[in-house]
Amino acid sequence: MNSSLTVTARERVSLTCDVTGSIKPNVTWFKDRIKIGSCTRFSNDCSIERRIPKRYAINRESLALEIKLAEYEDSGKYRCVARNLAGKSNRTISLNIRGKFY
Image 1 (spheres, one colour):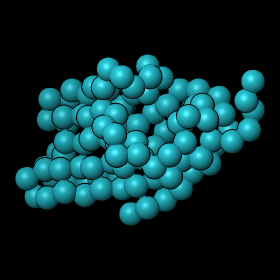
Image 2 (tube, one colour):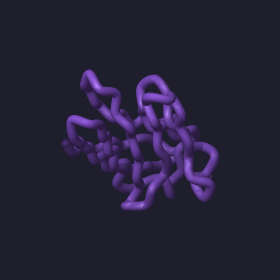
Image 3 (cartoon, helix red, strand yellow):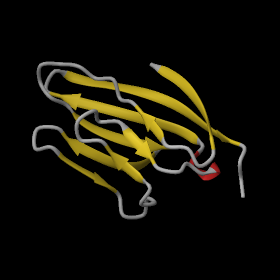
């Protein structure tokens, strides 16, 4: 599933990874094909790659990727990949950041 989202700079952004299933999935987030972070739902362990700005986080409960105070450089294509024993699913979101640059 593909979607797009446009927000104003300096806003908080939450990108959802809508996954369901009786077997809890592992989720990995990418931006423009570069891994941002992952969440192992079974152990409730989420982490962000070291080179990624600290304003990024993965919500342990919803598996959403959250960006505090979005900046123009956060614009791009984000992809969430969910995997479990039953298979794999993914979602792509095009994020556009506009206005309010100081």
